[in-house]
Length: 112
Image 1 (cartoon, rainbow, N blue to C red):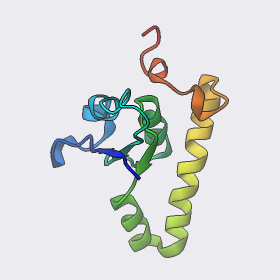
Image 2 (cartoon, helix red, strand yellow):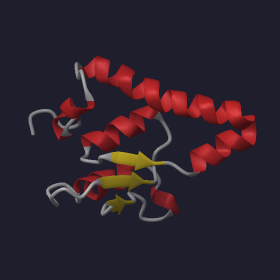
Image 3 (cartoon, helix red, strand yellow):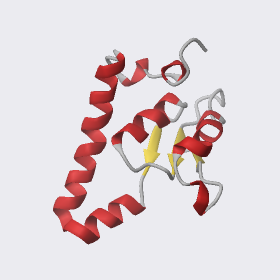
Image 4 (tube, one colour):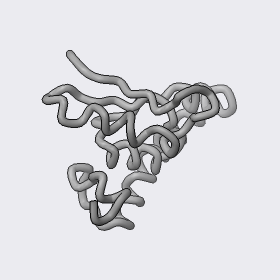
């Protein structure tokens, strides 16, 4: 399988999609049928929604899973992934999107 992984972090001081995710995630769009995965900056379910709006096909998580496992074990990881499922669904409902296919850059920059 071919794909493109985008990491929005320019270094430890730039964690989060807010600083660099727009350029990184969107950079892979229009590249044909190659999936774009965002790695880094995903801490909450709304970060998942933001990454999808910026053009990602999926997100990768690392440290949050390890933190959840360390603090609360299996239940912590389960809770984290539950939030990754429920928070985007709640945010989608708030903006009127019925499916992930309706999420686009205009969600972040209306009128673009």
